[in-house]
Length: 205
Length: 205
DNA sequence: AAGAACAGAGAACAGTTGTTGACTGAATGG
DNA sequence: CCATTCAGTCAACAACTGTTCTCTGTTCTT
Image 1: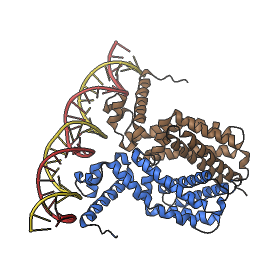
Image 2: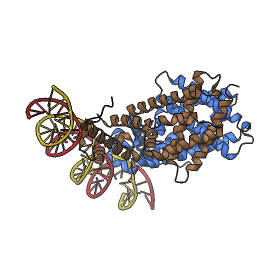
Image 3: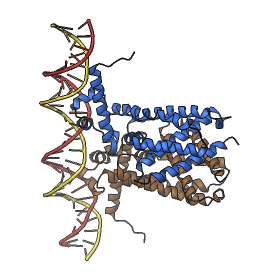
Image 4: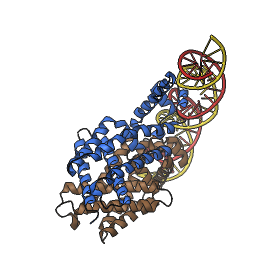
């Protein structure tokens, strides 16, 4: 069932994506709650009224952006935690992966960091939901590691949330780092991750 | 030199504060970048044009709000870290202190969490500056503790930043916690702090 | 007591905003 | 092939925005 979309739905999807892209670009230097409907349609090259064919409101568009922005992250999880090697190697690889993601999708990262506690409730909730799902996946990965032997489910989730929050924090810091200052931020993040990993190792003492 | 302010400056300071209060209230459900000048003056009960007697723009008002919001935090530092007792006691007291602060100044906390990565650059920078200063103070406090013997200045600052970021994170989480869910958030924060403290203890192994 | 300083009010400006209803033309499905 | 669906356009709406300039009344200074 390879459900080839009709020409109509293809074009609709294209302008929908154009709206999302235009919005993401405009959100480089403002927050979602100040993003105007007309502003977006102007940047996307369509009439203001056509906006309603795709979204009820800009908040609606924001929720769609959340899925798109955090969807590109899910592939990262497995790669990060499944990787072999010693502690320092794995940490370095994790930080590099985060840095690479920030370099590749800066607008997405900025959007998530900005709207995580932003002024639009449905968007905040959507981000929280995704990050929760994220933490759940990390917990599952952690549970499979030998270092987690004897850990309670609750404590594993606690650690997973700490890792996820630290990841988001690091990504945001990298984004706002001055040109050339990314190395320092990455070094800081590595040392912080090492401290957390040491804490993990001696948790059951 | 107790520099008693003239009646004029007193009244000016009052309406200035009224503007700040009105803005803070309006920022409960929107971000600074969407806050209108007229909206604020309307809520403060003055004419729109009088706004310019106090601030150049809403971004300017935002910067003033940062100082006011984070100023109420500086007293907290000494109290938190100087406190005696074992590790778990000190952690519990720290989290309680954060929770108390969030309950007392929810609007301030919300503002900082929201605008830390928000759409207004000068405000972002002001917050970053204050949090940096904050981390510096925490580092100084940490340096005075016996557990920090043998630590490099760099690593102390690394730990201080981790603590400060975790504090902000916890405050934001408490703010968005559902009624009655604050206890769970506090418990999570305590366990995470304990893990970081254990990592700290074994850092030099 | 006279004059300067100045916080705030008021009116007006050109633009902008979200949302409506009726309309067009191409893709769709029977 | 004909009727229907529907993405996108267009015009118009009342309401709102930041900023300017002019004016008023009180406070400050000398």
